[in-house]
Image (cartoon, rainbow, N blue to C red; front, side):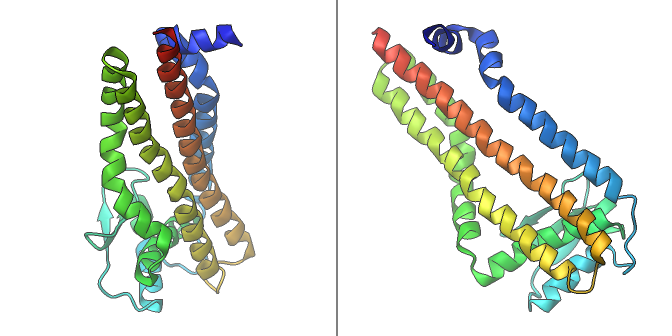
Length: 236
């Protein structure tokens, strides 16, 4: 056990790879699952004939949301909801497509708009935490490095700052799972039949797992940083 800790904290790039290997494997599996399910169900058109854009707009109208635009954005699987700019951005392959995958993704992003509209607490907290987490994801590493050179207290401050990244990933989980729940409830109300619903569930479930892996990765990185900081302090 002591050798493993020594490898993690003093093994440089090799030690980092050894420690991160489990989450690297999980990340690869999650990424493969997302792309595989998307590829399968993006080739299967729904009987309703709605495009992704029409589905998103339908959900917005059903919830009395008229100040959120549905726009087309560039890229592959770049679909997102922007709460400040008040728009749902759908990639071209989702915006124009009538596939099961397109409707599932569009309904999911519209679900975020509904969350924002009804004051769903986790999405508001995540939005407030986002700028802090973005800064912390970069600045915390610098502070920890300087702390290892200058003073342990500074390194511990860096750990606390990195904790906001972990907290952001943690809060993201209920936001994403709830958006998928809302999406599936709408799609199941006459827009998709039972076979199509199963495909939508697979697409959204595999997408949700990427957020679970992101949280595990942050926790794993946090553990490594704790071992480095406190291991270095014990050697002083």
